[in-house]
Each structure stands twice: as structure tokens, then as C-alpha cells.
Length: 483
Image (cartoon, rainbow, N blue to C red; front, side, top):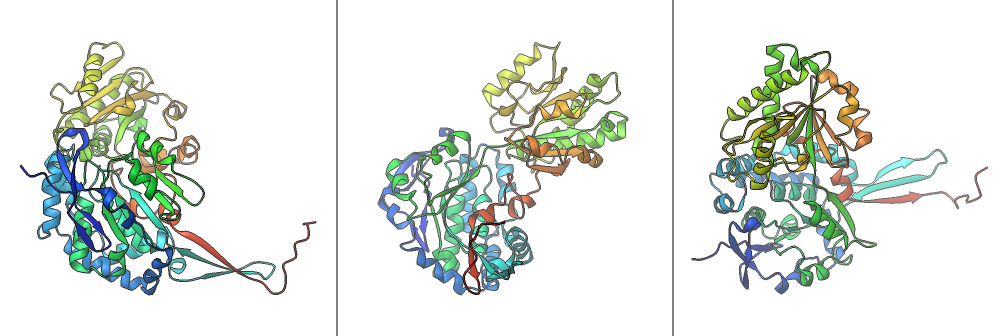
């Protein structure tokens, strides 16, 4: 039986020769891809000066290109994307219905007004289009402009849209883009690149886009490619081991923009325990943030801290909240959340062990591997909290904000908060402990921050740019010591 091909696409050319076999993530499938050692020398730009053709484009030209590309990405008509989706059903750890969810909406991803807003909010159109003048109090004029860079993007495989996001960020910053495809989604970014080749093979944006797969750690590829004369920025998504591996290549002239592995939490105020109406609202919101997309994203909630306030029966009320959340998760649309494809065996063993410890924990659901709510009876999260997945969450009753702060560190990305008024107690404190995003509970999976403003405690599109200063002075600058 023929193995599926993960095509290599280099600057308008589709490559499907010199194929070698690779295992998929978790060995759920094998696929073939062109031998990266045969073409690694072709992946980077031959010269940094070749970025100049991107500067012959007006921003409206970039919008025209992306808008037309978006129209061609409709999953109902795009054969490349249809093939990628079918193959991803096997390659992905999530069920087919959630793979469909990931591909839905590709045709609206590059809507003109959205792209313009992202460019304006993430960098500033003035800085992308030309030199912006700043006059200092001593009369010196400093002109500043954001230039694109030569970037290598090591994208994650927990969402097929990350290739589109990478293209968008590269196009608006006028950057050169090489994508290393992930082993649990080696097909989608290639399908995107093949669509670009069909549409406009000689367009500058197509000519500055490449997608390839190689096994992480392939020294023959990485030692040749990961050099400052080839690339200036490595933008890496991934787990701890993958990010750690990339750091060994970082040197002067080669910067790492690291989108580290993250986990997310929820914080619920005592109002949720006051009456049935408020408890149900909190439960419905929590179900979305925990169960949406089967808890596959960094922004998915894994631990929920519930402030018990003056309630003497706080643990019992938190347990009732947990029951309602479990029922709400089970009732989510199957196109948004569904029975896990394969519930993690190690996680299930941890959950089942806690069933026997009913003095300290109560486990709601999980017998069929459908997901579970683990209620702690003390203000402490479970020891395996970082590995909660497949619609499995831990509810922790706490008495104060200080108890919550113990559960926040540099790996904490999103905190979903309810009611909204509770944010006032958190917004100026949790960032000091490492948290990077606050949202209204029930909105954690909204992806606006991923493509617009701050993401993981930084502004990645600004980081992708090279910020250049042009200083204009009359005469010679006074360099005498300040008095």
C-alpha cells in the first residue's frame, strides 16, 4: 500500500521525489516525504538582498494576495486541503469531528479587514510601510522602520491553522518564511503552499514561502540550516524537549522566539456557589473552556480554583459545581467536543487511583474515558495537573487569592475568570507570577490574541521584525558626560 506523501514546497515549486519514510506522532501512521538532505541548501534565501521584492509590494498588494488565497482555501472546493484533512484524520490525536473543526473557516482566515487590523495592532502600518519620524528634545530626528526577517518556523501540530497564522505574520511583516511541519500534521501547511503555487507561483509572497518535513534532531539538516547566514529568527512552538533542543543552535545573529509549552487555569468567585442560576452559568462557561476542542490547546483550562468565600459547605458546593460542569461537557456539540479518540492510559490510571481516595478527592465521570472532573477536598491541585487532558480537569476549593497564586508560574498562559468583577483582584497581581492572559470565563479558546496582540507574554510579530533606526543630526553630537 502506498504511503501518504507530505510534499515539500520550496518557493513556488512542489517536490515529491527522493521519498523516505517517517513515523507519525505516536506511530499511528507512517508517511513519506522528500529527503531533506537533498534540498536543505535550497530552503534558505540565496542572499538576504532577495527580500527586496517584498518591498516592491504595497500593503494593499499583500491584502489582495491573502484575500484571493483565502477564497481558494474553502474546504468544500480545495482538493489539497481535502486531502490534507483526510490524512490528518489518522495523523491527529483528536477525533475526526474536531479535525473538521480545525479546517472550518480557512476561507475566512485572510479577510481583508482582519488582516489590516492585525497589521495595525501588532506592529503599526506606518512602521511596516515606511520610516516613522521621531523628533527628540535636543533636535535629533530618529526615523524608525520595521523590516522583515528570514525566519524558520517550527510549528505545533495541535491546530491545522498554525500554518496559515505563520504565513499571515510573515506576509504582513514582509519576512521570508520556512515552515518545519510537525509529525502529527505533516500535510496541512504543504496543502497551503500548494494552493499558493496554483494561484501565483511567481508572486513574491509565494517565492518567500517554503514548507518541509524533517525529523527533529536530524543534525545533517539542522546544522546546515540553523545558521545566521541562512536565517535570522527561529520561531518555535512546542514541548519542553523540542524547545530545549533548538536552543543549542542559538548564537549571535540567530534569535529564538519561543512559544513555550503552556497550561491554563480558571478562577471562579464565590458567587458561583450562591444559587442555582449562578452555579449553572459558571458551569456552562467552564464546560466550554475545558471541553472545547477536547482540551487540546494551550488555552484550554485544566485546573479550576473556586473561591468558597463564606460558604461553610464550600467543598460540597464545589463538588456540585463539578457535577454540573461534567454534565455540561457531555452536552457540548459533537462538532466542538466529543469522546476522546484514545484516552491517555497513564492519565486514566491516575484518575482511577484517586477514586479509591475518597477522603481527599471525588472523581466525577471518567469510567469510559470520556473525561472527568476531579474535585480536590483540600486547597491543592493534583500532582499530575500538568498532564490533564482529554476533557479531564481538577477543581480546587480555595479561601483566598493567595491560594490561587501558588498555582501560577511561567508556564501559565490563560486564566479564565468569572465573574468579571473578580479580574480587578487579579489583573495587577497574576502577571507578576507568570500568567500571560486574562479572559472572561467561557472565552479562553477565542483565538484573537494569537493573531493580533500579545501572545505568551510577548508581541511575536514585532519580535519577527528587525527594528532599524536612521538618525539625523545637525553637526556633531555632544558626547560630553551628562552633568
